[in-house]
Every structure is written in C-alpha cells, then in structure tokens.
Length: 86
Image 1 (cartoon, rainbow, N blue to C red):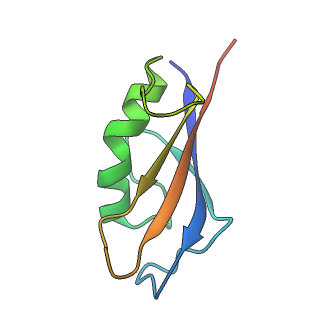
Image 2 (cartoon, helix red, strand yellow):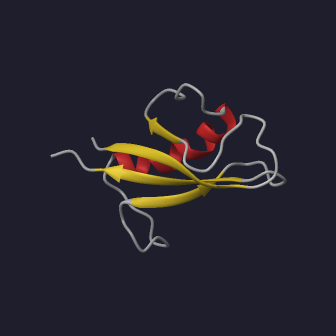
C-alpha cells in the first residue's frame, strides 16, 4: 500500500480549523493531528484510491488528486499526492 500526503495549496476566507497554504498531512486510516475532521472525511475516499494504486481519469498526473474541503464560503484546496513504496 502506498502513502498519501495532503498539502494545502489554497485557502480563501477564514478556515475555522486554521488551515493555510503549505500545511502538510500524512493521510491514513485516522484523522491526522491538526486536520479538520470535515476535510479529512472529504479527502479520505480520494486518498484510499491513491493508496491502493488507483487514479482519477480527470487528473493528468496519476499520482495526485486536487480536492476541496466542503465549506463553500471558506474553501481549502488540498493536493493529495501518492508516495509510491518500493
């Protein structure tokens, strides 16, 4: 199983969890320390696909996915990146 890293690439408005561009989280089976649970629940299905070797047809890079948190007034945009294990 591969690893997945989530990096905040954009944040507009006021994030109630305090996320900001440049924040990095290891995504696994549990919500990472400091990550908003709502964001984690949104990222989890995408990270699971990447962790198990899948990809998304709309992404030009098969090792990543761009996902937004569910708050439409204060969006936080994450890049999920697969880290392939040897």
